Image 1 (cartoon, rainbow, N blue to C red):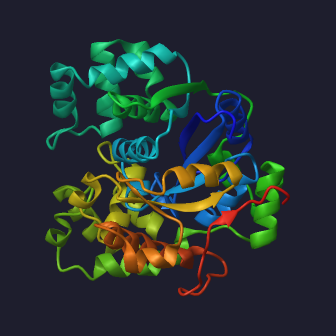
Image 2: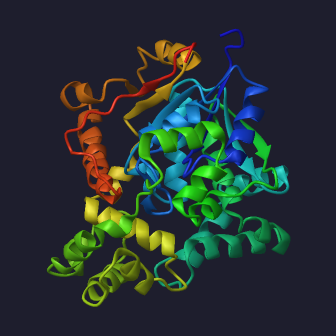
Length: 387
């Protein structure tokens, strides 16, 4: 690799689209390679990804990514703050020279907002606005605090999802050797949410060729995963609880949200129906979905607080393999290249967390139209030079 500097990008590729392709091309115009730290089978909005992680990773490599590492559960469906913190940790641990991310509007504003988190007065005010006695959701409390400290224009900018994550990335990069590389979001590209609203056939026809070919070849025209296929499993879990106190230590849970979920499960008959019944000014739909997933999968707050002990390889090309070779003796994080071996020989907490991640993937696999058997062996896709 002639230019040995490489950048990482924290992503979901749900699905990979032309905006992502533009971002990769922009990164590779400045760096010798790009590593994608991609959500596993569950994404940050608290839902399953439209396709499995190995399929989405191959689509990324076919479109210019050099290495795709998994941002594993439970961090892949954590809050923006914990999602960003875990992704930044992996990027720094593997020696990334930069973390690339998209943003909308004034780049300097993002750095100003990130700096506010070092201000004790801002932290206190944010806690007041989002605390237990408040009726505001965290995003609403955050923008309210921004408005009070910087102004209404800044608050309006911080309502954009890309900017919220950008601030979290900048905040977590503070003091790290990995530098921020901000890419203005290019207009004119259909977003992931817009593509997910299309039928499967139209979605496949609307993504870059490398991605559409992977989706069509790997999965056929009917491929989309849908968490509604697990409706009965989620409702049965909450109906089977003896009370809200059983949810006390669940990540993202509060006493009143736990009570809402236990009551709601007696009337709801679907995942989305249960979540929608609990949405109010304090609890956004995404937060409720994340709490439901955390409860059903047994994710505690303490489990998310630590840094990811591993990152599994999902796909790579020749440059990506060079980066993997350089990380072979990495002391900060274990890089898993052989999934089966991780369950038996993972060091430290890797074995425990990898087993949790695999269990979640095995369950989420049931959201596919034709689920694979639980014992099916998945291996990373390695793109050869002549392929």
